[in-house]
Length: 376
Image (cartoon, rainbow, N blue to C red; front, side, top):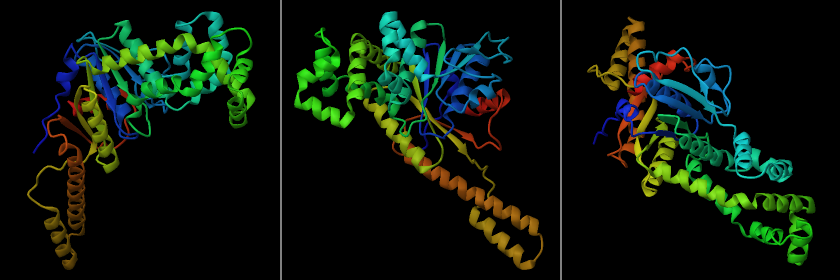
């Protein structure tokens, strides 16, 4: 059964679609796909578009002619939007800066200074597992709440698992609701003596054990961090829930991006199962780096047999080499199509489009424009 064709232009031109989320395994071309979609939405469909990337390699900035990208949307100049009136902006998530912004927006300057100075916060905001994915959700919520953009295109983090993007809010909530943190937080609310003294008095033997495992200073930093962020915990959960509901809304379209490799296709299938389970709108699958071959009436086996016959005669060696190249490409295309059926067989109703492998990496707007045309 052939999967239905993904109508990319129909998706990008639909005014009811406000968010497109590109997700998939790392290294499959999510960033390039997101940038190409954003460019086409602005140039062809006249939409005010912002592309949010989490790719630290900065290839997106270079391809759009920008010297750098940061946590603020930057206007991409020199693109052809005069006829359509669209706009294109791009930004790259700075997870620590985004975390700092959340703290600044939802607490007093004095409390914010205490939080910023806390060693545990400094570590968590920069390196804590899941922080990048959670802050991507935070930034998406901020962009959508501003209502400045017709379309937000999100390039999800290059996680070990594509599901980390959806799991991050729940993981952070579990951390904030964890038993140890609740035990640390309870005495912090009582006031009076220092948090660490209260923790020690409250826990007795438990506290001594924790000190041996974590160290007294780390426990002090942790309990201070919990006390400082106490008033913000509910806000974290509330905003995560709001963004999650936005992702479930028909205004959002998820595009799975994969390469014709078993691990990438398997990851896309896992993500599709999760989206279906969470009732999130799956718009389609983009298969990157495919090697399509136009039917020429000459199979791989026939090509190899003909090349062997030419070798026996010792004549027309160039023709024999071309036949073998043709046979190799046919077999590669067959392998890629077979791998892709691992997804299309499980999700036959999900629209699909493919992008042919390019001779070189995309490094400028013209390259992005070409990818956008191939997607459409």
